Every structure is written in structure tokens, then in C-alpha cells.
Image (tube, rainbow, N blue to C red; front, side):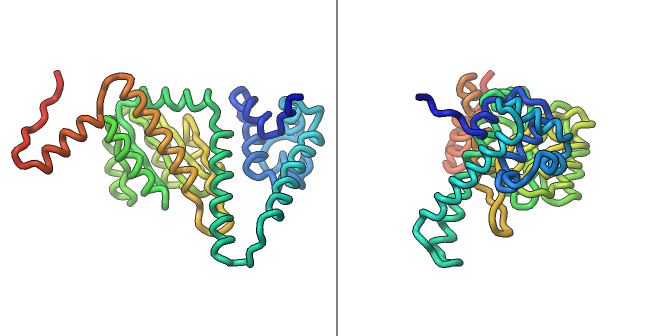
Length: 291
């Protein structure tokens, strides 16, 4: 007998065809299901900023008779996770082993949620956005600035013009002042903040640029300034956001570009190797551009 899919699987299947308001409900139900387990339809509607009828119709869109059936599935998931947590070997509060296991387990969950929130059809649209961009500028907020630099380096390694924007406002302003229309501006944010990144994306939009958001928190204003959005949860029990899912998502985007470069015979990595050889070998000849 085939296993009946749970609410997560049903959302994953339906997500590409959901309306914007339904997606808001879906995102909250996936990322904050512990809270949703104790909410009425009206309370959930209030938290995500939609009508109560939208929540009810969202449940019906997933194949439930109504919101109570959806709530039953969510509560079953919460109970299962609580039971699983109590079956783990006991560790004293603050014990290094317990803290380490908790962080790894949370990151594992965030990685699985990244796949749920970015189904194949959505990834294909993101890949097309990357493919059409003549150059890519990445702007990171806070901890994400290091991720922007890392990803820009990976993209350059496969032959794509990509640059990490400066972290200070003055130099960022200088970059935006000369940004070319058609540039893909990628805003990276791991928290609910990121107003300056969102403002930079807004400015770039006016200049004719396309925007892609890679966020760890859907409350970030980067979400509202993105033509397409990649959500990779960065939530953590402590004050420090987790960068695991964001790093994985950005590496995945670089892999998409690498695949396109290999298919097109661009060989960006080979050019990097030639330049490296020239730099480290005094007698090497400057590599010539192919005609």
C-alpha cells in the first residue's frame, strides 16, 4: 500500500503552481510549523497577512477537506519530532556533545527545507536567470558578505564576470552609480535584516538590472526586492544564524553556472589554470585570447 504523503510533501508538489498569497501561507507552515500547530486558521491568516478564507482554501488546494485536517498533519509532524528528540541519548544542558548534535541536526533540517522551498521548476527559472546575465554582482548583508565573496570567486573560476559588492555604503554607492543595465544583482541575507541590501537591489532595478534574492529568513526586505527568490533557512536556537543552508544554496547556483560553462565549451577553469601558471612561472608566456 502506497504511503500517504504528509503536508510537507503535498506543499512541495503544489508549490510551483501556488499563488503568491498561498505561498506565503506555505512558507510559514513549513518554516514555523511548531507555531502553526497551535494556531487557528484566523491566527495563521493574521501572521502571514492574508484572509482567513485564503488559509482555508490553501488547505483545500493541498487536498484536505479543510484547515482542521491540515492542522492534524502538522501536529502529527510536531509529535513525531518531539518523540524522536526524546529517544536520543540524554545530554546535560550546555554539554558540548549535546550542543554540537543539536546544531548539526538543525542544519540537516534546514538543508532539507531548502529542497522543499526550491522545487525543480523553480531552480530551472533561477538557472535561466543566471544564464542570461552578462555579469553578476553579489551583495551580502552582515555575515553573508563573506558568502558573496566566496560565490563571486567560484563564478569567476568558471569564466563568468562576477563581483562581490563592497560592504561599506560609500564604496557600494560608487559601484551602483556605474552598474550596467542587464546585470544580475544577487542580494544575500541570512537574517530578518538587510535593508541596505534591499535598497541597493531597488536602485539596481531602476537602472534596468534583474534581481535574485538568496535569503535565510523570509522576513528580510530582500525578499520584496527580488525577481526570483531562493530560500535557504538560516534559523538557529542561539543568536548566531546558521550559514550552512545559505552556503549550500549559493554553491548550488555556482554549480548551475559551471554546468552551463561546460556544456558551452567555455572552459573558464582552464583559463584560470593558464593564468595561474603564468603568475607562478617567470618564463611562462602570457596566454592569448581565443579568436
